[in-house]
Image (cartoon, rainbow, N blue to C red; front, side, top):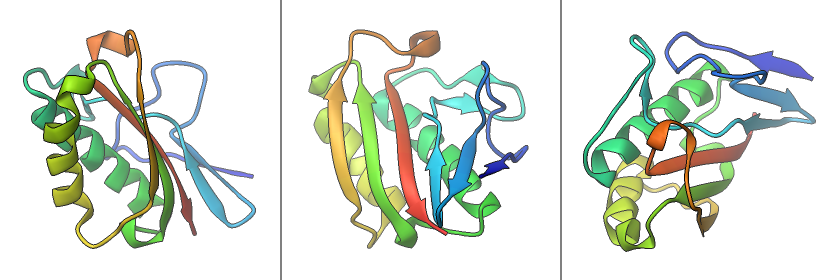
Length: 124
């Protein structure tokens, strides 16, 4: 296994790494809408939070020399399924032609009051 760490994505806020490469795949930790430079949360509507989360994941993918076109699976955690359509629009815009398998799960709460968290698995 090889840990992936990049300053262009938020540093881990606990005892975990941003991502690990194992067996030709990248496994990311969940990303919430933290701005890497300040470690402050993006607040506001789900679209703004989703954009930051996807930007953070893009940075981790780049650090592992892969991209959205190699993402096999994403898992999305939302605190409000009423945000599903707005989230979906931001997700589709960020991923472009990439269409990885995806699960979306409603949760009671996320770290630091985030509305969305995403983790992924990609080929490297």
